[in-house]
Image 1 (cartoon, one colour):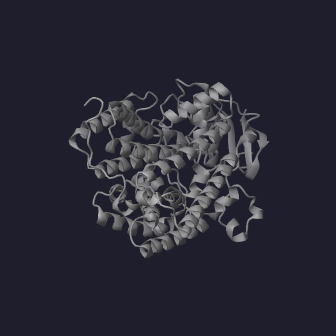
Image 2: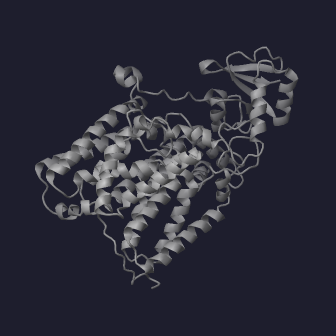
Image 3: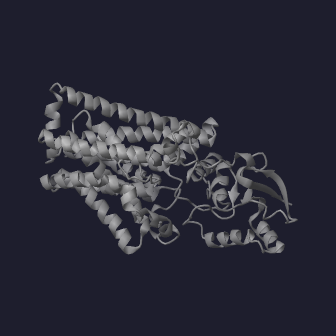
Length: 517
């Protein structure tokens, strides 16, 4: 039993709808099928080329500054980096195994953190593409299935682009490819494929132990995507109809994962369960807004899931979808809107189900109907996300209707680096507080919610008061002394009359850098 040689599992590697994929793969495809397969591969290839060019551009928006700041701290102090945003000795959930590895790469090679983030984006996209390919192969042997699944994953969202890390739409990935969430989602697909293989094969204890470690790495790298990965893993186990002899291996893998989570030295993973209400819920309420516009193109996939579920009550995609609905629905009913980050557990199974319905078994006219639905949804989704072209093509070269969908990335803060040194404290707010730490500086208040920072509320209040139009100079000087502020960044000229500040540089969009006298 130790080598797993006597493990027997009642598991069908293909769902009933796709069972003909293996038999059909050995026959010469018809001309329409060959043309359709070539078209799917070509379309997927073009989309991947677009994402590759975006990696070179690395447009700045959202959390990119947070991840760059994390690399800055790890590069300078890999064993005790402290808070990535403010000058405080606190842990941070951003210090994941992936970021520690990237920080070590930056330290050894001397590469700029943004170059390292480009490498991270390339690695994340590679893992995502290969992970989708491997996982879909556990569901269908049809040659066109992986390409169709990848297109569905990128384009089947809604008629309004929705940009959020962990949501792998084309426009969203164009801005978040360098984030740990992209790599984590890629690892999740590989995890599901490996787990499916272990459940239907003779995997030994070593393989199951490695699966437990991989599960922990996924959760440590991006906690929300880790929830999605866990739901997919449960669905894979349920669908496997595993024999009793497999359950001890599943239990060992789970225990190994929990131990690895507990042993991670950079932050207390289990303390994150108390983070609800610490600024997370208001931010995530937007995930539940405008569902038709943001996720409406997934509805044909839900119909495909219903068909799969009627054929097999333990279909892995159907079970995956139901688990996602339960998690997201519970978040809505309870007011824990951060649980909406599990929405990919609802969307991804539906996307894959629609792609697989096109190449599944059944009557030709049924497959043709699914193909029409998928084709129309892909065209609509591609048009909705066409603004992503603006990240590789100059906006003035785009047709007006496409240019209107383009969202200009943020301008960088490299203009402050001739004056602001590594570790200098900068009084900043808003977008500036999200970008200054990427270049090595600290801010007084963090630009993002920080569960592990005990005086976050006070720091935010001090920052708000500092920029108040009627704040006395003595209050500003006191804040500067308390937090060791050397520089101030502000938009416009609201602080020009303060004798305690001296203008040293002017940046884009009316920004001013002041030195504290």
